[in-house]
Length: 293
Image (cartoon, rainbow, N blue to C red; front, side, top):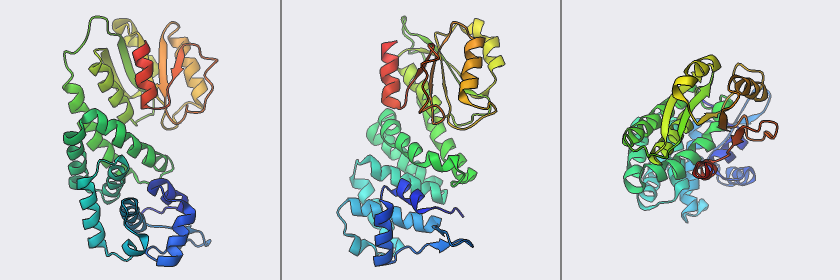
């Protein structure tokens, strides 16, 4: 069972830690445990309860009322809200709940229902991306366990691959050629897959190499591919001591190639020393950047 700090609860629920403590003291609907060193922590059940209450509170339910709902009533009211709303935050919170429980049926129902209602692109942009951002930092710090991460990633991955396949034969004459890859040791490919979908939808050619690609393998294929741009992301740490070292090696291996990069590990880096490397921080920036190429 996972252990969450009050800061984790704040990040996942959107409710300030100060407010959580007030609710905790006043209504006692969650009661933290303590470690041997007297540090407070919360369980999956605490997180689920808080998320459900947060959803209903955001839709006008008074905390003084919902704090005393039993689990069955909480779940019923939340699903009623889900069926009636297009609020992305509600959908994100419901996906977090499905992830915690490893509830494939619920996650699939949520995901498929959103695709039917909003379309794949809006679902990924407005719901899946915020969901991944909300949970991503917990994956990095091992608060969410590998089973939960793989469970969610595989379900999302399947949907995006189907969307990519639907874009076959959409290339336009003046389209660019992009090669997409993840550095050696990097396995988080959901973002990269969605970039591939967006590029194909816009009529560009895409060569998708996927997870954990050595620079030597990229170099071997470079002449055959003749790509205009290479795209990669830095989500987790990898075998290189730092991202700067890796970028330097890339630029030496590809002396004329332009790279487009993103990810948590590069978010705050100053890339002015790398003139052939462009950075984007979010999906809108990526779309804007591609449109200008």
